[in-house]
Image 1 (cartoon, rainbow, N blue to C red):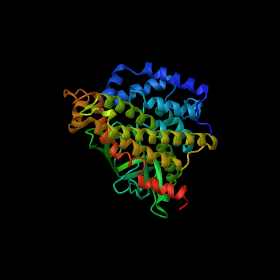
Image 2: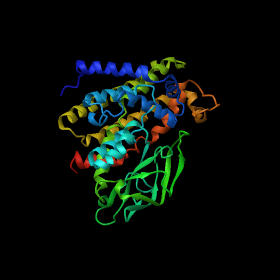
Image 3: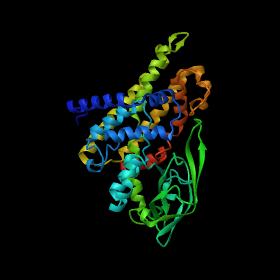
Length: 398
């Protein structure tokens, strides 16, 4: 199995780097580097830049607005994008719903929804988790009862990222209580402006508002907004989650943080000299870098296997578990390096139009926010407990 990049792949990487270096507006770079709050308009601006370049949907067919890139090129693009001071493109539309529509949607549904997904004019959120049905997704209770040409939806979703930005939601709902729990779930597309929808913010430990509760009270959703057959939405969910988990490893982003941490540690003075030269911290950084390199090699092996087989296997669960754990440990090491700076967290300084000054260098403010956010990394996208069950069943055969 050859894990080395070809000459053409290396040239492609340079092309991507050159474009990203020139394309990101200074205002967005400054926000990202200083840890400032990213707004919907910031996100949409960067989305539009990538869309106009033709690079917004690397995994889509070229005929539908995709790039026609190989899996290796898509991997390279994702890695370089993660290292770039640019807003994160929310994955709900392009990376999650888009592939589901292309796989399971009707021609009419594709014609209706794909253009808005591709050009970013429609912002989507994901309505999967519920109170008591997060890791155990099959136990969800939000109901959709057929009434003529509509479903009437009642229930609650929670931890819904950016529902306050969203125009539409793709959601799992219960359309039957018979048989196995997975057999009574359907996949619906719900207009967030529909009467009966209420969005309530959840403020997280990092001081930001990215999560929400969403309540449905007799919300009418046309049957034509159902993707796939009634009670067969679990197949769509499994397909979607396979795509989601392969994007949660975060190798390039963690490498980037480690690089900044090493630079910071070189300037951070202790009674024994630079922090980077103290034996205990030097050993910690070396171990983290070694484990991250091993994860990168494993990810490349999975990529090569996917190029041969054409599908993502249960390895995605292993990558997700190891990658998110490393994200947490690297962010913890960064906080340790900050020393007394880590005693104060001023999320108000990161909000739009804030008049509160940041405490310490921009790296500190941004990394503290990331440290708090990463507490959830081993939960979102499927908790570690869920991933272990997937590995036990599909890898170990238990």
